[in-house]
Image (tube, rainbow, N blue to C red; front, side):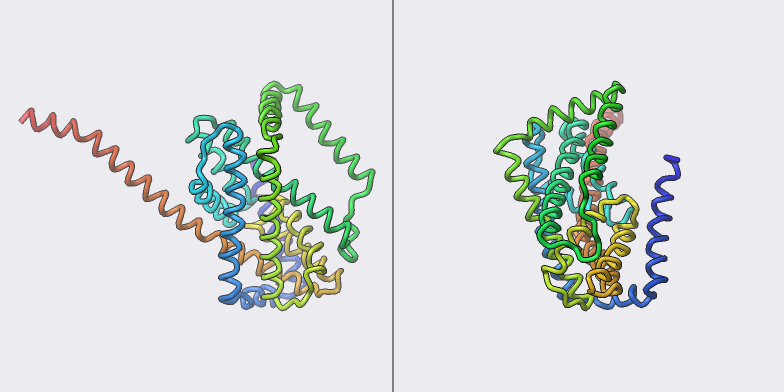
Length: 320
């Protein structure tokens, strides 16, 4: 099953998009592509740079607190590369896995490098959930009824506790849990977590701004108050690892949510398409990072080859 899960996720994402497309018509796809203009592209690049800079800054704070060296410039370039990989490959996490392992290798501690990225992403998700709960409590999403009740929360917490107990009985998993807990405690410092929360909240604001740009481009005239609860839920839905570069559950949810809120299901679906394309555009600087990093590696390899070949050439000259 593990072998076929990546393909199953791909099939599920395609099935979701096809089902929604058949329900609303293929015109929603075309409308989404036509809606993108020069202003939305420029806004996507600007917002993308801001959110990437904020997220990279969060990563730098966490990595340095865990004793790893990481400059902001390196973090920004690696983050852009990860965003591009996440945008073009299924699941949406492979870019983060690569930057975690790569930074760990360069720092001499792969395990801690992976944990730094884990905590960086975890912090962002926790702040997003907190903001989402606050928004939904003050401005409930009409017709969705997604507010968690007491028994549901209790079941989720019980399930997490059971996973920890089971994992603790497995030695390799126990070691990972111990190291993760130790590093997590190191991050509980007033020099770290307030800044991490602030950077995460600003990043979420950037994502919301991107959604607003997408909604306006899609022709929706909904107010920020109407969009806010739908957007934060959409951001949480995007964390589901069943998508194609982010496309899939997001569009289905937005169609349902916009329809329930009286904003038009087709507008919701088109907004999802526009947002996905704008997110890909915002990640395009990652292609430049990939090109430059590959070129740098080639140049370094040539230098090493020349250095290794120099003694051999001298030896041949003396032999002659």
